[in-house]
Length: 240
Image (tube, rainbow, N blue to C red; front, top):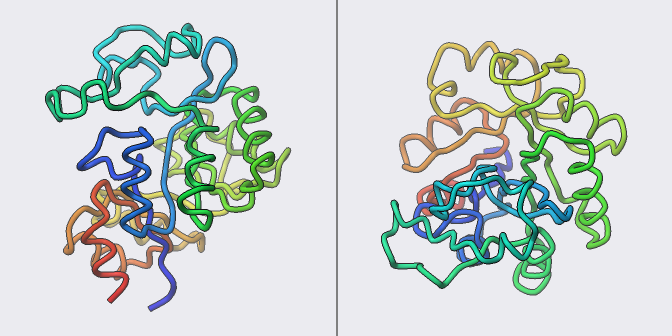
């Protein structure tokens, strides 16, 4: 079997609130090769980690991160009540990217990063890349975005290692020339379209494989990296 990288989606989000330091630390402890996270800028231009720009789903508060200062974002409680009830209430915060980088340096200096650019601005890319370079981890990152202009900007300005998605999933699609790798969700992996994208000759990241059957399908279909919300089955298969 070729080397397959394992990645925790938003940390270990099956069991812990997504994109929180707790979720990332639990993924580190499991032994994944990489963690994936989502980057937005606060109103005062601090990179913060959350999947949605509107914090309502995980925090129960309507708004948008770009209209909130870091201080205001830190008052949110990303305990994801609708999924976990009150189990994590008051125990987690919305982290900054820098907080994650400090945690990784202390706990898992070997960890790789899947950096999903969610705010589709060059400013977000610039600030995020500057911080990753400051911490000496830029070369350990894959950069993801569902926006072709952002993928192209990452490649043209930073020669970043990029992973885009199929053209029909992308905003502002600019072609595949700026892709180093391509990402396919598990539904596409299982479909006849998988062969079409394999023919492009790009390494394929497959997500999210949360059971042994799906992991084996990803391996059979040539995954270079497999992402999971619950990485336990993934690690069991890949490490055996």
